[in-house]
Length: 492
Image (cartoon, rainbow, N blue to C red; front, side, top):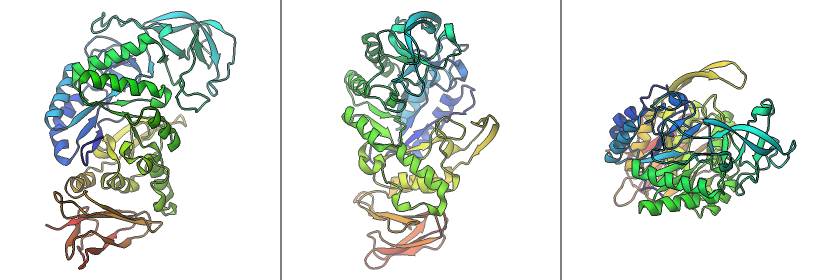
């Protein structure tokens, strides 16, 4: 899946300023990130969205416009130009960082012309329940990309390339999903709302040969153009899971190398994730949304949360080689669509749980590393000012410990509702061992084995200043403060 002790970083958050600077910033940061232990970076969607230079990237307009054509009011995207994007990828790869592109295949937005079509309206809340007669509608479904003028691809998109839409110019006040003539909702999707194929915009018909052919061709073009090492797939629970297995196999075959894939299946039901994994034959890893949810609940619950259960019903617990572990992302951050905040006091504990253990492929979040400040309207209609703390100092400490000491056997001490710990014994190439102790309640002490007799260990976080010396059998009384984490490594 990833190299030993690999670490991914999500190099953006939702509220970055739309100043076209991100690709330049990433190119400048790549060397530093590589040195602290980041081995791969997931970059935001690099193609033109319906919001032009303001679009975060998920309102996909033209997959072939990487900030090259004057479309939707700008040449560049929110993050910069095509040249800056390609340059940043090369710089990162030279520094030893793999680059993953964000692929949004579920929907398109911002069509150039309207078309008439026949369709049946369905309920937003139950996609198996029609709420009206089969009728003629008029909708924005014709994509001609005049600014690109057939460069790279001559395909024009029409209503028959889509399953469903949510707008009818002849009845623009109706709140409905219109299933288009001759179409059906995809199978092998999440069953929320009866069938969660439809998410937004013009929903791509993954059974249409022209659609599948164009997306496979785009994958070839993208690999040739950018040289990326893998893809993060957006909104996979809304697309037939078979598609991702076939698409990734096609692109890997074309590239003559293994192309990494990670899917965003945002469900807290781990069985739904297992189902996707089974359909894709384990070829696509998944972000561990249930683990994020456990972190969210634990952070809200204080010492009332039983830390022995922090990994219960998670992907990393049940299929560790296919789990990309995370604390927070652009959808879960404050004021976003899936807001489920991990409180600041708990974030160091959560990051220790993904960065310093053997299982999973951990992903750092840009706003947790660098901090963030923005304003937006919440669900209450009010405007809120948000400040997100930077945890760069302690994350760098954990990354250093991961690179140097987090190897070999792992012994767990999940034997207390508030204070849990584990040790790594190291291996021949990475001797020394490591001990981690954390508490969501009072300060804690735990006798743990690190396999290093009569050795002195220090807490690299600086939370506890007195060292710990192990006994003749390699056991030590390791400590942590209340509501805190300590990372113990050999004193050199």
